Structures are given as C-alpha cells and as structure tokens.
Length: 213
Image (cartoon, rainbow, N blue to C red):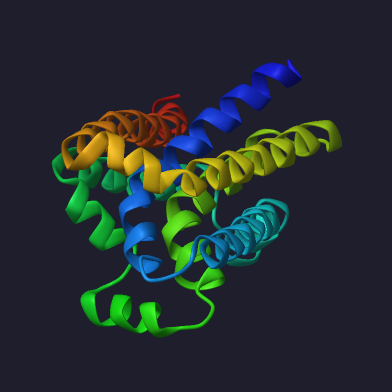
C-alpha cells in the first residue's frame, strides 16, 4: 500500500514538476556561469523546491479550511491548472518554457542576479501552482502519519531526481537537440494533461452524485 502511494505520488509530481521541460530555461539562465556555480545554484534550488512543496503539503488543509474551500473545489481548480500546463507542453515547448518561467525582461534580470536558486529556479520554474495544488489535494485524500511520511519521501525523491537531471542537462541537451527536447516535453505534456483531467473528474463526480442522489 505505501509503495503504491509512493509510486503514484512520485510519478504524478514528477510529471507536473517536469525537470525535462525546465532544462532549456535552466541552461539559458546559467549559460554564462561556471559548472561549479551552476551546480551550487541547482543544489539550493532543489532544497528550496523540497521545502516549498512540503510546507504547502503540511499546511494546505489548514489554508483550505480557513478559506472554506472543499476538497472537490480544490481538485477542480488544481486540475484546471495542471491541464493548462499539459496543453502548453503539447502545443509548444518554447511556449511552455516562457509561460512557466518569466517574460523577457524578468529573464534578463534573473541572469544578472547573483543568486537565482529560489527565484526563478525553485519558484516558479520547478514548484508552481500545479505541483502545489497536487500536493494539497493529496494531503486531503491521504491522511495519517504514515501516508504523510510516504508522500514527503516522494517529494524528496522528486527533488533528488530533478537535481540529477538538471545537473546533466548540458550533456542531455547537446545529445537531444531542439527536436528531441520538444518530443520529450510533449510526451510529458500528455501525461500532465491526463493527470489534470483526472483531477477535474474526481472533483466533479462527487458533486454530481450529491445533486442527483
């Protein structure tokens, strides 16, 4: 049971975070940096990524209760966000990278910053609204200390995999090229789109059952 939860959380979160789609933006922001500085920024970004997602996972239910948001509403809203990201990935990798990260002016400012590990690397490039809403929904669905522990482990595992992928991104991009990178992003986009639609379905069905029951 716990292994199944770990795999399900890891696969869904990895698809939404999508470090493969973040590779071009990451390389553009760190193109003038030394490999040592790039790796240092990447380590800090992945630590921030873990912290952001874990905090929202643990406190998300309290935030929803404070604003009076139901789990069905959260599923639908999160599903719409995730679906939008999936559609962007399917339509154009360049469009997705632009929407996910920042506009041209902000990107130029990011290049001039001495530390870009938190913004824009950790947020919004890796931990965006999609991944946050995904974890909040999972916190409401899977309660209990052991379930929370397993989901937090999956968050840490995703952060480690993100670090490993982005660390070798210069070599990966040189091998894949623009065409290969676009194909990978579109494959991930299909998975993200399916996750988003499933979230919306899981939110709508209970509402319809309560109406027609």
